[in-house]
Image 1 (tube, one colour):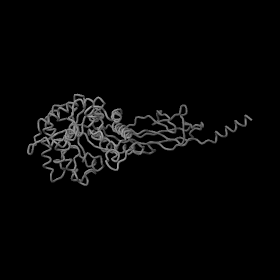
Image 2: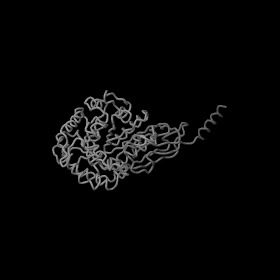
Image 3: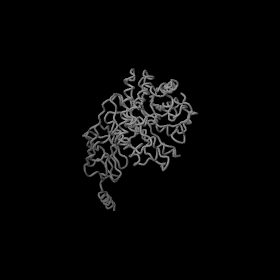
Length: 444
């Protein structure tokens, strides 16, 4: 009787099928694979590694672990390299003890990356995560509290730095505090006030970005207005740059915010060829004006944005960096729009695998266009509107911040001071109203 049962057991075991290969990431034959890609091989059932499994990557023993049906590889992918994974027959077994019956071979090649200036990339990477002092110095009024935010104090910036933000972006609107043509003289008191706030950040060992922000009334990118805009832009940047010319590299200039033709049909879709050309020309004269003031401005880092600071393909492909060194591309991406920026017809949930992949694709286009060519990128603005969906906003913030930093892109949250919109910190009490989101951003 026992012999019969043993025979039955042996028969049952031999009838079980061997584990079968289902898929891999990257796929076999994949080209231009990103260096941060997770390398995985998936089977059709739960498997374990056999002792002395002999799995290799490029003929060297692979660092591999099992997670249920998946082999997870730890590998430091290098640029422009072909990889072959070999999973030998018998190297994995299923829960019935049946081994893999055939060899599996998977090959893929990584992207070629041209990093022309590692110093620039290292500088930008050190900026980490940042915070925008929105709707304050950029208020479209002579009184910079006109939009409802209190006058900024050092205590506020101290709290921002203490939370872990390393970069402070100071949007500044100048047109309400400057004189008329031909000199466009900036009011000394206002320039000194901007300097005071700059020093709040620098005294906290932060990177600080100063720009020209809501000056759209005179920065009009059309051929008809171009010469006049250039003249005023040079005058304004010459004054700003001269005032700060002895400051060190922790101070960064940003020539323009979201330069675009307001009210046009193409305002937020990458603009027209004329508009994009005008924006390129405006950046060029602004950079020349800054460099001409000398001292540390001759080599200061300067951020430059595509049309409307857009990440759209037409905007980034038409974008031309001025002829200079130490330039950084500045892009704004409230992605996806329906979750992050829409005030009507919005969605309140985020975090599916498809949504994560879409965000990855959005950032990878910046990698393809700029970073792989040795041009550093800063995400100058991003965030998500408050629709009473804290859990999803926190999930989105954590993924977005980590995804940017993993690609060498500092991300600077847009905080407009309104806790019902993008605000994270109460600017009166200096307490974090949405500490979960702030923690998700900085704890990458």
